[in-house]
Image 1 (cartoon, rainbow, N blue to C red):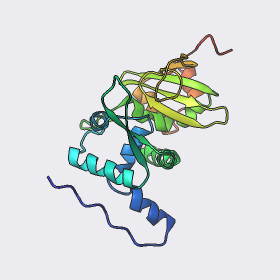
Image 2: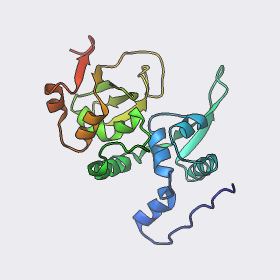
Image 3: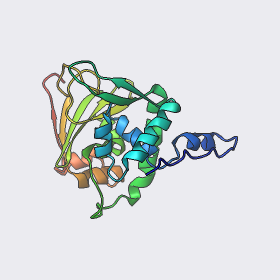
Image 4: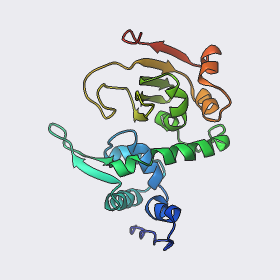
Length: 216
């Protein structure tokens, strides 16, 4: 299947139009969502973007590299793979994804039979509620998988897929998470839609929370 041509510019002297020139193509912001969780191999990106063709994904990544949103680097030995990661310009899209998630949360509802689900897809709408726990790393466990959120002393937030391994979200040796939190997808949706607060979900037993010994 031939690669789809890149969308032409809107040719409008408007900041919103310029932004859509760069990220308005189908799948682009979802690629950003995946890479906000840390560097990913092409095969991992394809696995967590069900429905995208290999040609379209390769094309989007190439366009995003050209736009300065994504870089590709080779992992050091013994790994023999390349990973894609966001540039600072690409990471600046996190507030955009947070706003989109907040706007779309009322329409989320129950998963449809055809819907794919990944645990880390709940990270973005939960960044606000989890920030209420204070600075540190929160490990979140759902039946669908795990993700972690890092909250800075200044209130900044970032997230990663899977189990926290210490150091930066992309990996490294070191500390355990400061908080371990277990809940379910239904509670995540209630928090995202504003139907419940984190404190209320904990009180109702819908969220269990354990602080590690290194947190007073």
